[in-house]
Length: 313
Image (cartoon, rainbow, N blue to C red):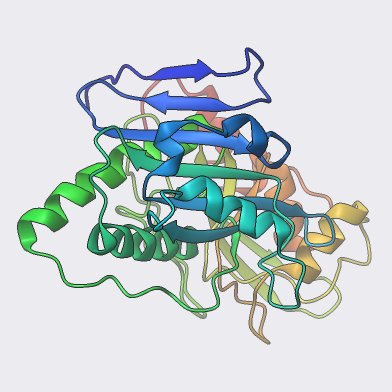
């Protein structure tokens, strides 16, 4: 993988204002536009074109970002993306998307998006965002991708690759899955897979936590792994049904356990990201635990031993 030069232009001279993102040899242009700055975009030619956009907001009760994926074509009056964003801002009806704080717009320097290209990108962005599972996607239905030649589809997939880089640089991991899936097989009921190395530096090494609840006798088995963002408890892991009566956990962790998407037996239906191995271990067990000690490889080495070991794992 080679490095990629990227240009971020602070259109208002401040980090929380409008930002234009571009890459060399790419016809795409990506704009971050705060809701409060829509009027500053009046007269900007790129935003009178056709394009695809994201509306992004945050829900305090859910402690989660929301996103909506849409498209906007050029109208008879010559207006395009900016006009559509204004309509979203004015929408107060029961069918309104949600309260969004910023828009991320995808267009091109040569105004080359037609209805077919926009439908394909709208579909792909919506599907990718849902698969990543980081944001709640507000689209009621997944847009249809339309019919493309294989040449055009390949061209647009390359556009998507660059667009994903831009979205991440603008502060949103909307399309990024919590973990890399290569080489890691989530556990199934009653079974935890062996540790699998998917990188050369132990970030990506599958780690196992086995615990028996002292109150109920339930055996909990979970698999986790370190990532650049923290520690992930993998989908298919089983967490304790009840909080450990002998150890307290902070309110935010109780809430995380209550809100986690899991079945009646406590098996997770999603990956769950934490800031540390200990938070992840406490989430699984239902009581405060030292994750550096509890998370282990298939051959019994703890995470603390792995981190202290001078040899690669």
